[in-house]
Length: 90
Image (cartoon, rainbow, N blue to C red; front, side, top):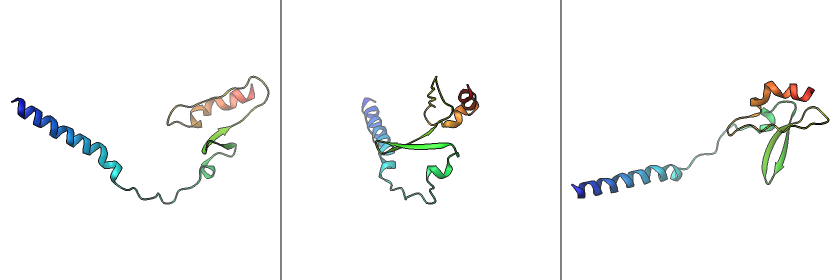
């Protein structure tokens, strides 16, 4: 019984290893029809390059105090759409 359990564990480990590694070995073709982010952005959007990473930001209002609104992972400036104009006007 102990031998069967050890053999099952080894087989399961090999299957799990293959399932984790195999997706990285399959080549992915380049995406077609990609448009630059600037083409998809709003009229008031701005972009800056920081360490070869393109950062999208918006700037509104003037004076003090200044607010920096950061959205969470996999979110966008859409997260702040209801507050953005209100904060810019105050």
